[in-house]
Image 1 (cartoon, rainbow, N blue to C red):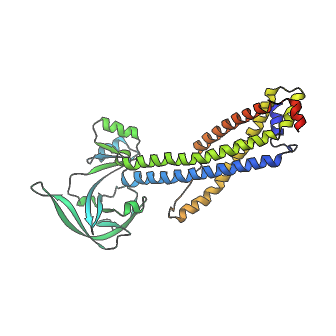
Image 2: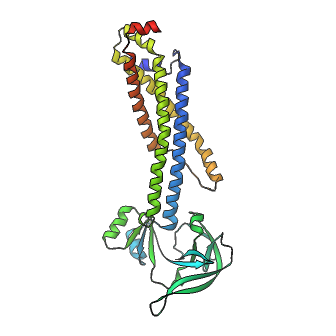
Image 3: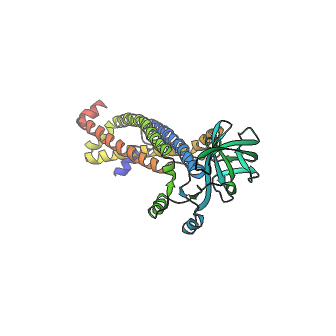
Length: 350
């Protein structure tokens, strides 16, 4: 009986206020679609940045020393490779020179011969004069000028942020003693286990502590700003509930006069609006899915060539549950206000 009444007062053809119900569904759908789309774009931008940092610059974990063989046995499914890095001054600009070999899996694509120095495509010259610090025989650190002919050019998954300040040389030409071993494909628990066993390991979160903290703060601020949109949705929702229940006062009084219990009437109309809200949430999710390809094209037009957005399922589920709970509470409160009047008074007003 309760469910039948809820369906009748929500989407039934006999509902006298179907236009009002449709407007509630559309306004909810539009608001939810906008909220989901913004969250999807922001999650993609932050996720892409973090993935780029982990894949190109800092890696999941970096262990001091060349321990590739030992770590390969321990993590057979991970990508493990050695490299070294030195700071250099090239044409008055600071660069990091990375020494790599053929096993390097740092998210770069080198076009040309990798046996010499590889520079980014934006580098204007075919010759490199790099001033690096070298330890002399007396132990003093002295500047050393090295000249290289460019044999290759590269691009990375991290883009200009990385490419504008890195160059690559063969690991065989490195004469220092600061080779490290990078690991890609392990979790934080594996890194902690290595550290507990005495390995001098640095995780990407430690190496990028400033950036990681900044992105976390940015995410918190994003949700604070989006909460304002959520407040707008709640205000609109409250107004919709008041209009919906206000238009049903006569039917509620008639049902009470006909002998139906007040709690059954309350449940029926709360359930009716819940069904309307569920239709709005489902329509909003569907609209967001339709908008995803258009947003991806917009991101690609700004240089994000492989932009792929996804529906934030957990966020959508939490948002839906919160809206449904708040809507039910608002509806119950509005019904209590209606029952303050006698059924005869309500019928007389109608």
